[in-house]
Structure formats: structure tokens, C-alpha cells
Image (cartoon, rainbow, N blue to C red; front, side, top):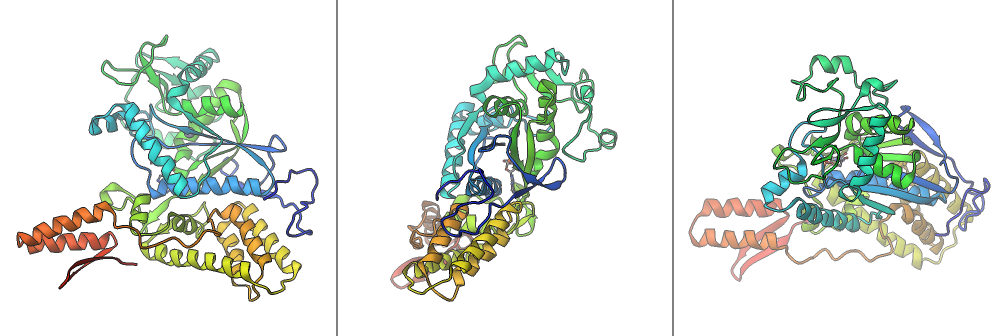
Length: 484
Ligand code: AMP
Ligand code: ZN
């Protein structure tokens, strides 16, 4: 697609001469309303997204948040903007809870997996980017690792101390929220109510329970620590985003994104830090993605409903089916994952690709007005706070249009710069090789049968079934079939 910049109000678009540049509206968590978006710099939009803490595999819930951020990128580019998008990789200093209590997530995994924190971080970072790639999620222009920016973070902490917004205790350097004119500004936290029900205070030297750690003094056997005037120590969780955001995007940039859970603690504290350091809220727009539910419930280990991308691909689905599925709900609404919905979406993706091919080969005449009307409505939908369910409605109209014409194929291709569904690629080969995990279970079942342990054999067959494969014992031997 050709890129146009906002020089006038007319977008001299190849497909529809009458299509005007449309305003973009985003719901801003900071002001709690939909606002017209205009970047600080006319041509380039600067975005910061809170990235993964790389201590375990990313779930399809995490991927939902990444998909929403990818759509944001693509929509901004559709509107002619260049992007400067930074995403951090948290490889140190994120404690088990979002407050300051608990064991560092990285260290916990390192201990449990008998690996060094660095090995843990490298391993899960690689998997994270593989998941992004499989979902056709673009890699942001800037990827910044927390441990590569320790000197910058320390400078930030020093500046906060100098400005009178931080104080040192025997265990940490804390941000002093009493110095702020307003706290919180992003969330509806009621500090007084929270205080009444607050847990036992961890550090008696803290002036307020809401003061949060900027820098933490390392206990003796702590693995990840750096020398500084605070002794062997390491960063608090929030400081990395403030420091790297400022370093790569400036004191104030356009958009800050993340999952909804980041609002009350992490993003609130990023704002506090930035106000203490330079008197500014770091981003003008704050966009937050809602949660993915599994069968109507929160995804959690205890419910055994934590799914990863490989659970989807192991069942033979193209990962882009999940991408298309994510468009079925607005990013600010909850989205309910079920296998039935994935199956239906898989058929929809095939239908979309088939329709593209039909239009491509079509020879019928379609009026230019039809094309520009479809394009305009698609553009309006995506510019209205990334309304993908509405935009998909327009896509299906184009797909089902009674006349088949390459003009419609070209239009679908243009839409696909936002959808990222690779509609021009052939339908994926579903009969994939049977995954090793299934083959191992089949082998265990075989052994159970040889030992005449029928209960175990049935149990394994059910487990295999749950994972999407059916075993049939035939005269010729055993058949393993993908059930779809
Ligand atoms: P976590 O792995 O829990 O630290 O989450 C990393 C990021 O993914 C957070 O910003 C969350 O907002 C997001 N996230 C986690 N779980 C979900 C979910 N079920 N749906 C959408 N986003 C999620
Ligand atoms: Zn962050």
C-alpha cells in the first residue's frame, strides 16, 4: 500500500477518489472518553507498549493484548502515519504481585527450572517472538530489554531523589506519592478505602503504603543485582518503562498501551514517576485491552484453562484463525474463547481466502462507487477506536458481493494491510504431522493396553481426545485422526 501523509484533508487514494481522510478517535483511559487523535509530530506516531515479563510462556490471553496493539499499529499506518513504537522486555525486577511484595518472577522460574535468570529470559523471549510471528504481529521498531538499561534507570532514580520525589530507606528507594498534586490519575483507586483494608505493612520505613519501590537493595543471596551508591541492588518494576520510554520516545509521546490490569498499579506509577522527573504525563493517550476469557471464566492455572498458541496449532489450526477470532470482539470488551468458536472461525478464514481468489479471477463489472463506499465504511470503523467487529462486517459484505471482480480482490488486499490475515496465501494444509506430544501419549496408551490396564488406557484415550485426536483400534492396527 502506498503511504500518504496528512498534508491536506484529501487522501488521494488509489481505490476511491472520493474517500476523505477520516479523523481517528480513541478511547483514552486518562480522560475516560473517546477523543480525536492527533499526534504530537504530524507524521510520526510514537507509541510505548508494556511488553512481556519473560519468565514463562505467553498465553493466548497475552497474545490478545499483542493483537490489539498490532491492529493499532496497522490502523495508524493505514491512515498514513509512520510509527516509532517501543516495547520493553522485562527480564528483571517484576515481583510476584503487582505491588512490591513477593519473590521476583524471573528468580522464581530460574530456581524452579534450575537455570540462570539470563537463560530463562532468553528462552522465553525467543518463544514470545515466535508466537508474535505466527500471528503475523509486527515487531515494534524498538525492543528494549530492562537489563540493558540499568545505568539509564539509575539516572532516573537519582533525578527523582534530586527533585524531592523519592527517599531512601534501609531496604529500598521509594517514590513519595505525597509529593504529587494528584494520585491516582488513571484509575479510580480510592486510597482511603484501600488503606482501611490494606495488608500488614511490609516495610515500616515506608512513609505511605502506596509509596512504591524505585530501586531495591538486594538481600545477600539475590541473583540479579548491580552495584551503585545504593549498594548491590536492582530496579523496581515500574522504573524500566518510564526510563526507556523517555529514552526512546521523549518526555511525552502519543500513545501508551497495555492490558487493562496494568491501569491501577503499573501505569499509575509510571505516570507518577514521569511527573516527578519532568512534570509531565508521559503519554497523551492511554489505550488498554480487555481480558480474554476461557469458556466464560478467567484463565488460571487452578482452573486448568491456560491455553498457549501451541494448543491451537497442535489441533491443526492455522494460528491466524486466532487472529481472526480476536476481531470478533472490540478490544475494550471481554472476549470469550471456546473451541467451537475457533472451529467456526477456521471455516470463516477459509471462506475469506476462497472469496479473495474468486474475486481475483472474476470478470464482472463492479461500479467504483460500490468500492469507495465499502472502503469508506471500513475506514470509518477502524478509525472509530479500532472497531474491528464493525470493520469485519464490511469485509464480509465485500466477500459476499454478488459480482466477482478483481477490484474487490484489490480492496480486500487493502483491508488485509489492517487485518493481517495473509488472505492471498493458500488455505493452510490442515492435515499436519501428528505432534510428538500426541505420539508420546499414544505410546503410553499402547503400553497400558499391553499391561491390560484398561482404566489407564481409557483415561489416555480421553486425554488424547481432549487434545483433538481420536484413536481407533482397527484390525489393521491403530489409526490416529485429527478431529475437526
Ligand atoms: P502477565 O503474563 O500476567 O504478566 O501478563 C502480561 C500482559 O498480558 C499483561 O499486560 C496483561 O494485561 C496481558 N494479559 C494477561 N492475561 C490476559 C488475558 N487473559 N487477556 C488479555 N490480556 C492478558
Ligand atoms: Zn510498562
